[in-house]
Length: 127
Length: 138
Image (cartoon, rainbow over all chains, first blue to last red; front, side):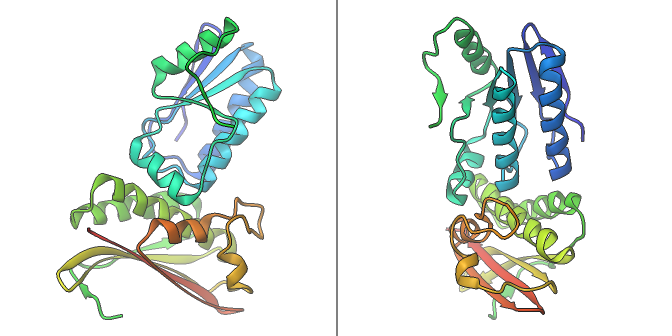
């Protein structure tokens, strides 16, 4: 299952449409890291609203995406983690340290816009 | 163990990473049949995901068996993850947060224990591993 990646202004938006295998997740990671420089994106949003499970492998891969993209000079926001998914992640012991998260796509875009203006008011960066 | 089965068990063979997704979706479907709340469906699916990935990573092949069980009027889901892989040399270490022999996060087994109400593990070095977990409707 390929994840469509949309370019909107200076941002890339990857919207996960259905459950992803480990291989799909790795492919998403690799594609994003390459695309960010190709389109000179300043920010990346990964929308995981459709994911009903974020397990240890998915968490690690999302974390890797954010760290790799930061090394490429752009920012990543993970948006749309569902309440029951958040519950399971915490019980499992998973965190997204150092990774920005937002409630939904709109909030994620607002975060990147603020970040671009040098203000990051209202952001959740997990440290 | 002696829990009454309420429905036919579902067996999912684990041989590739698409099977992990399939196992957790089947587990979620089954869990919803016994009336577990939405949060618990995600919890059960996440536990299945961790157990199935352990099978794939350490044993290459195995099976996830999903059952709806009943115990004194209490209903729940039972997940058995079984393989005949190399077994776990040190169970105490394997149950510690952050311990992994394959570069993972080391949360699979201890995290799964936290997610579920009951957790049993039998592992024999050189013969395989069977993990049985249950989550009851409360």
